[in-house]
Every structure is written in C-alpha cells, then in structure tokens.
Image 1 (tube, rainbow, N blue to C red):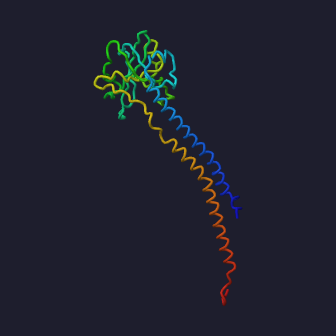
Image 2: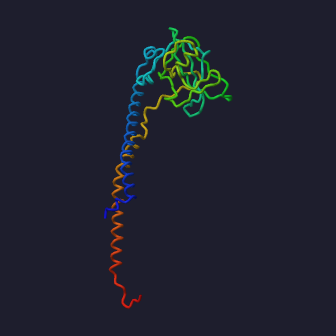
Image 3: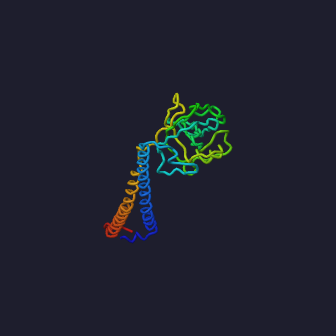
Length: 267
C-alpha cells in the first residue's frame, strides 16, 4: 500500500519536504544570530554610554577609522566652532520622525586639528535648495561633550552620496570628505553633541540610541524551527491519510465485486 510513494506526485512532494527542512533550520539560525548580535550591541551601547567621558583625541585622529568597540563612547572636545564652514546633512529625521537636516559644524581644537560636531536636527526650509536657517553655534572657546560615531558610508547607512547638491549640503557625515572641503586635518568619525544643550532647544539634540529592545529575532528563530519540525510531521500525516483513503477505496471495490445480483434480474 506504500507503493504510491513512488508516484511522480509523491516523489516531488517528498523532495520538496527534504529541501525545506535544512532551509528552515538555516533561517532559524540566521534569526538566532541576529538576536545574539542585537543583544551584544545593546550591551556595548549601554556600557559605552555609561563610561566616563574622555578627550576625543584619545580615541581618534586624522585618518582614523572608529572601531565598533568605540561607537557611542562619550568624549569631550575643547575648541572654537568654525561656522563659516558649517554644512547641513540632508534627509535626516527628528525624534518624532519629521524630515529635516542635521547641522554639522567643524570644531577647531587647540592644536589646530578639527573634529566634526553634529549639533542636532533642524526642520527643512521651504526651499530645499536654499541653505536653511541654522541656529548659531556658541562663540569663543567651548567644551563639547557627545557620543563618538564612525564616519558614515553608503554601504553601512544605505544613503546614496548624491552629487550636485546645493552649496553647503551633504548626504553623509564623512570626516575625509570634510577634510578635503576644509583643507585641514580632520579627526576620524564625528561627535553627536549632548552638551551643552542648545539655547531654545534648537538644534534638537539627537536621542540616545535604543539599547533596551531586542526585537523579535528570537521569536522568528523559534518559529522557523517549529516549521521545520512540522514538515516531517505533516508528511507522515499526509502519507497515512493517502494510505487510509486507498485502503477504503480498495475495500469498497471488493465489496462491490462480492455483492450478488438480485434474483430475477434481467440483462
């Protein structure tokens, strides 16, 4: 009664089941590894946000690539804002998801090097090709505290570095790009300013990164593995149902053959 498993329909069904099992196991591990990375990143963010601020020069220098281990580290920088070379970063959102600009201002350090400071978010101007009304940076020497961030790239952020933008507007925060524009040594990465707070609350400071939620990756992993277990179970159920239906059909056929014709029946 199991010879039906050699039929074309059942061979295809069995092969599909055999392919689905390893694929869904792998998808489960993919989600599980994403969960592990999220947990590790949350721990890194929490530790770095809690760490005591250090001078930015201790963690980066011109041409330096900020490693992931230093992302979100609190740093300090003392210098003078160069507002003449300030730029705005297009297509950035506020805490309430409004689209606008980030204000990127060079801070000239005491030794002459420059660190780029993301002072926060401002709304988009009516004319997006015009330079927006940017709240002025503090005058004179100032000490800025903020989170150290790596240079942005298209690959990491998904943001295209468009060309032909209006004057003093950029798509990505890139210290090397700013070094070319300024003609000065710019340390790698940039600072997301957290202190001092801007007068009047603008630019709007960027919120701390989320390091509490872990997403649904673990739930998705368990879901994929449950689907994996369900494939052979479902295959067995279908086989038994097919066998039962074939046996019932065979019995019905035998009973029909054994039933005598009624007396007096004529051809």
